[in-house]
Length: 151
Image 1 (cartoon, rainbow, N blue to C red):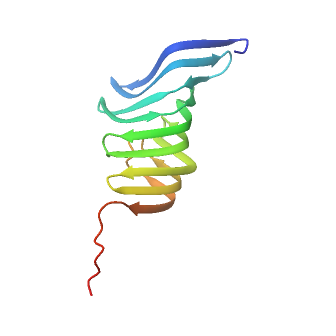
Image 2 (image 1 turned 120 degrees about the vertical axis):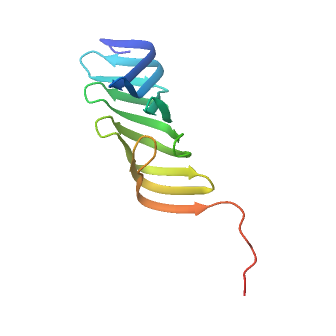
Image 3 (image 1 turned 135 degrees about the horizontal axis):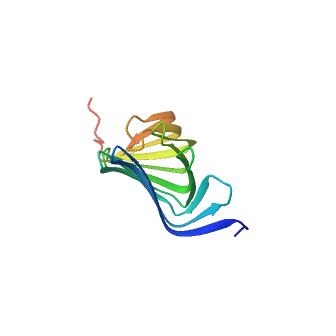
């Protein structure tokens, strides 16, 4: 650990507006560098809320939160599970802006919903995976298909 750095354990950071929790970020360990506005997390878990009810959950291996701008970057095995959209998104790096209420990446993404798998490169969405815009997309459907062709 560098001089001037603080190691924190059992960290929980939240944003609350008008008595409504917008999001929480939990991490077993975190590092705060003296003079920086970023907190670096190991195994961060973010939860996003709509009307104080869980809307989605985001996990990653590493990441940081900029305390001044209230935005985050999460990396390595990033997973977003939307409870409201019944959808899961996987990627390698993801950005979050509290001010814009958006998550996004330019990296490849895979989205699972029902029997549909969507691959893309680059996307933007609300943290609950609603209002998704995928830059370059390829969708496949899995499941039973009728092998007989009607003549």
